Length: 322
Image 1 (cartoon, one colour):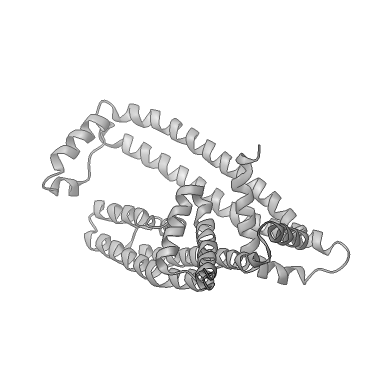
Image 2 (tube, rainbow, N blue to C red):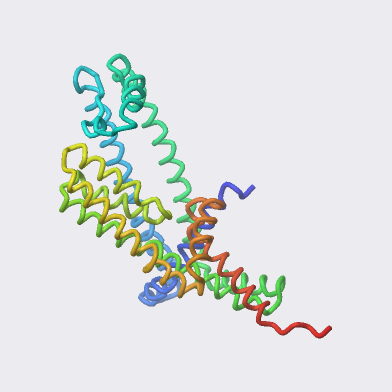
């Protein structure tokens, strides 16, 4: 019955744990009998604005750009979609790409394909956006009640877990909470920094829409090994315009920023907070994404931290006398 709401519940728990220190300072500004109610309501509204505004803006801009791009290509050369000039320089793939492109986007089928693609793409995008907005609405609703009753929820969870697993579970819970906070800092903050740096690189290289592509880079940077998709596309666009030096510079800068962030900054932040080596951080993130979706980025390292905490506890105990 609750399986469709589990992503929203997980996101609410992750957001509540990640923003605990900020919410404590926010709550201190309110006084009176209804201080918890007004603090929870206003802070949830603020979190909702921070999450919804970039999502809606990015969705509108992406839809507008994609539709205009398809229409522009469909109207080029009487409806003939041609490959970029640099593709003709590829020694082995040139013939295959030209034949495949001609079959798919030839003069006879380019306009028809574009006209069929636009409504299908917009319909699919609309369904996905509506589904994400519904999940976000339930996430914010759950988050509001967690903020409102967080002290009682925390005590109830600790008592229930202690009753089921015993008093030794207390350090385990602390490690899980610490791992979620560290993962949020290591994933979100580092991804935002990557997006900001790459937006500057895009602007210097003369790429189209550097802010939009920078935001997309930040979003994709939260997923392991996904950021090259964005700056790879930017490099291809620059190469198509003839700016080969700028394209190579964008790709090299993106790989350098990604290497430093993924191999030094992010593992240091997550590893120190969750007390996990880099290998287990990487396995936790990848396994979490595969098992739980996007929220698994935060749940995976938390579960891995719990597993490592159990392992350290068991391995440090002296063996029972035989």
